[in-house]
Amino acid sequence: MALETVNIWCWIIPLLVGVISAVFGFLIGKSQPSNSLELNELEALRREKANWHSSLEDCKRNLEAANIALQEKKDFPFNQALAKSIFGKSIRKDDLKIVEGIGPKIEGLFHNYDIRTWQELSLTSVKKCQDVLDSGGDRFKVHDPASWPMQAKMCYEGKWKELFKWQEEHKHGKL
Image (cartoon, rainbow, N blue to C red):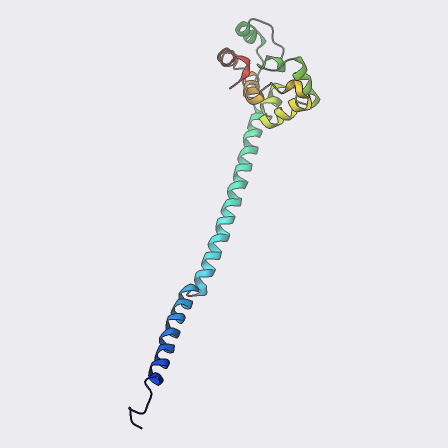
């Protein structure tokens, strides 16, 4: 069989099919992970990350609970004479009206929610304070409870000078 009788296309077509198959094989091989060990390591790292995130959230909750427990355990004595000397008026223990922005009607709303002391108000979130206000209707929408827990904490801890100074600097109890 002579080369002149063999058609050139009989050589080119198999050669082109081979080259094209090699290129496709290379591309398919690159698109898939080279070994399943890498996939297992990646999944293990993802699980570990999720575990760390859940552990972090648990730690945050435990820290918050511990802080609340510490605040609850502290018993600050109420010094009525000191409070009277700073504010110039007699102050009853756990009178929520000393907090700038809380009047008799808002105090009543808090009492309806069993928030009766400075300590209880200091441990109340601003969102909960807003819920208490919202329960009173539209007439209480003008009030901003953002500073109330902080002011109540100063009252509870007997920081009368700091409270008086803060209230003088922030008229109407707004931050």
